[in-house]
Length: 170
Image (tube, rainbow, N blue to C red; front, side):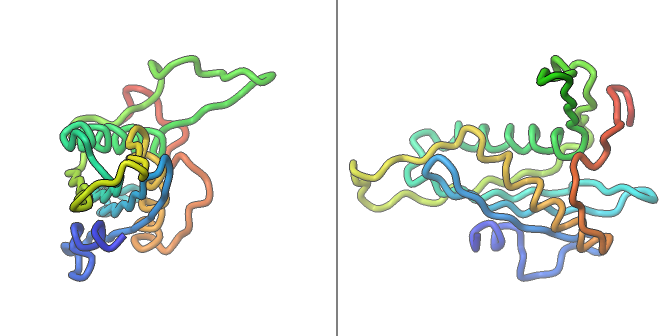
């Protein structure tokens, strides 16, 4: 978590009007920490400005692919946290694909910094390499709601933030 915090400049104040939140998680033999920085936008909204993700997957075989996977996970997490909504009827999902769901636009994409922890000096075959497939996703929402609490003073207990947003809204 220290690497994500340091990478996001946690020890110094964010730019005026911005706030940060942080979260940590572990899955697939990897540890990930994420700092999300947001700023107030409009009367009731906010804009995600910057996301810093630190991942320790023991040994990154292809660091470029790890970075791309984490950034893609951040995009998926933003869509789910801000707009993703699924309802069920008789055990079946009512929304069959994403075509009617609001997604972030390129102008809404924050700066994303991915920090991959350095591998050990000598890797051991007995230590499992960590996975990175979904690890940009799970810590985004908790980091965002922690930042939102700092911004608004209100705790968010249900997601998405904008459940009624539709494709074309914006």
